[in-house]
Length: 308
Image (cartoon, rainbow, N blue to C red):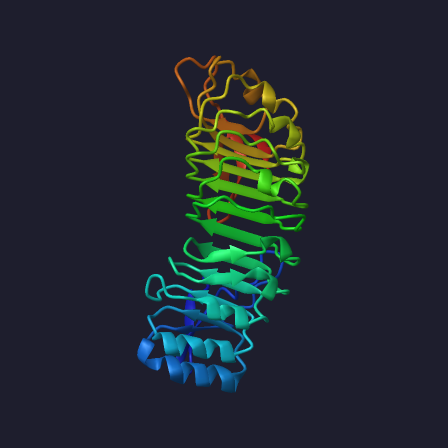
């Protein structure tokens, strides 16, 4: 089993190397700074060793934080700095390919300053400018953003995730090309999934705790959908919208089907929550082929029904 972090010399290094999911992880390349009193010493060490990726798990002074701008960093994760700390200085580190801000900070990030950016993970508080200029972006995860998003243009992003963001429609994504994974969780104002012109590229769709989502009419547009998670969202009138999902490999559905007819679901690799008025009970269960392997088989009784 790989260690989450490993001590090398005087410092700890993280197993996760900050690369996007398409690139093989090279472990223990990320220097973790966990003590504010050691921050300046750690920055000097990073300069001397040519370290390009840093994770901050302490609360350094504002002056010490500015020292980061002196490093040609490729990756940075800021996890425990004081709330509302201004991180606008990050705009100076134009070499960044990975940015993760995991607390409520302040300041402005003009993403046009990061021509190499591939992964972006930000909690609300930071103002983001020019998402449409992130020509190499592959993954974006945004949390607790309440303001509406401007158009993201035609960026070719693979993975898009929203958590507790105020989203009323996907119009700002309608021209994005190549989205393969779309995840929306705890979005209380989302009522429809229409508006995605390129829904046919999406292979994984996760909709969780979007209680007012009731317009599923765009489902037939998701012609290449392989994985679907639909949990604690609004009710669906019937299952007819699933008929065209010929590429579906696995789905987990925990919503009400108003007319109670789940015949179509019974013919697909779908685990669904049982409601009293459904005309069938779910008869699939998810298991792993080997004890320590990922769960990738669907059984009907003792018989293997689907494998993915």
